[in-house]
Length: 295
Image 1 (cartoon, rainbow, N blue to C red):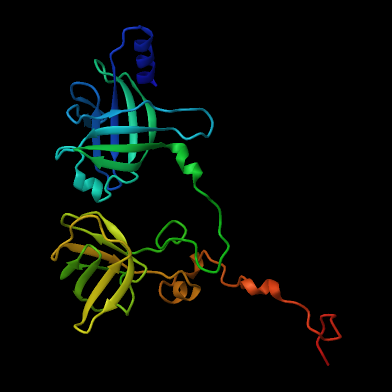
Image 2 (cartoon, rainbow, N blue to C red; image 1 turned 180 degrees about the vertical axis):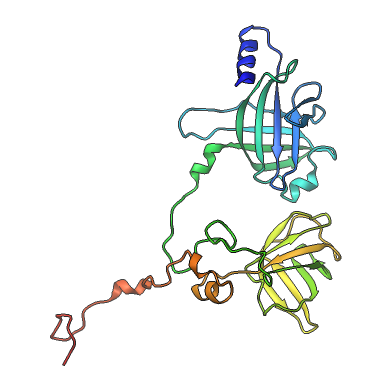
């Protein structure tokens, strides 16, 4: 509050010395700082760099539940945001904070925008990032789904399954990789067939470090090698020798939750819900329709 009060006092003076500072925090925890000032500024343990060409269009803000949005623009460079990182999806849904700062006294500042990165466009050595406000999340449908399969995601707060349990994770190096989608784990023992199907694969080293994808198929070939195929290719180069981590998959059935994961107490589905054709049940042609047994 002291910083906001000091900034308001500075703005009230008429002659202002303010700049915008942008803090971008990726999902992997990496932080970036940018400013439209002509020199670097530093606060909160982060340096906001001026040499990135970062700027932004007018910020659209409103009261109520309307969505706040704007667009940030900047130069692609090896020292800031690279085209390879954007293509790999490392900045997808990154958290964004925008500060208005008195550049002569950075303790006088306030947050004017908080949100996430939406659509990214790149080309001509520059990038354009759509910034979405916090109210954007209210556009997503919420609520409980009543269905036979489990509605939780394996390992989330509803499921509560702990992957630290032995036998549910494999860590190893790749024997081969094809187009960022099919990965040869080599001979992997101790896991049943299709154990990792519907699970996740995460890259732990190399150019694709930190990226992950959903497993479509888990097959053991005639050569004894286990091959994992993803639904979508990873957007970075993955090579033989890179280290990966593969998590067991769940098909969300009641029996799988009980037998494979021993986690039936946290099952979020409704296995006894009637089938769709239940509503088509109609009285028979019998003369007696009182609901009692026939004799």
